Length: 110
Image 1 (cartoon, helix red, strand yellow):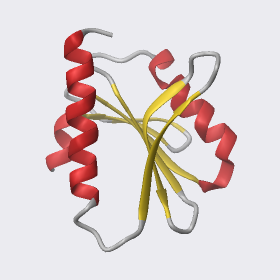
Image 2 (image 1 turned 30 degrees about the vertical axis):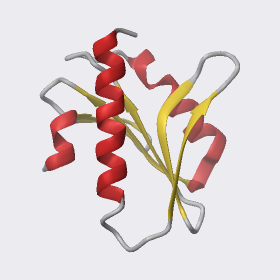
Image 3 (image 1 turned 180 degrees about the vertical axis):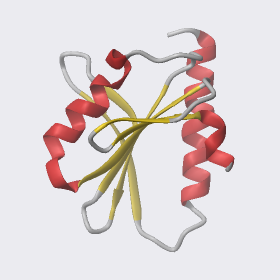
Image 4 (image 1 turned 120 degrees about the horizontal axis):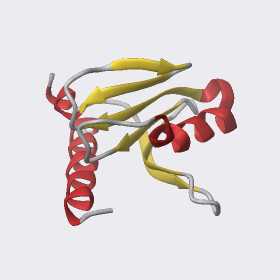
């Protein structure tokens, strides 16, 4: 990952944490990483066990492989996995698979 990629990931995660502090819900934050290289940058767990996951990419395009960590986490958690979002620097959002979405990063402020 490039220095810009690390910076963007840190910025986006901090923005989500900031916005998460605005609600009156008990949320836990973490990340997901497996020994074989699958990872998700931010996993948000609601007090009732539901999980929401976010992956951040510094590119203006995405590949299906960019969703592999989200897919792996969704399959592992089953029904408790609410949705996964890949945030990227592109301009178009899309529903790409069961409970998996791709959104432009600027949607954090929309």
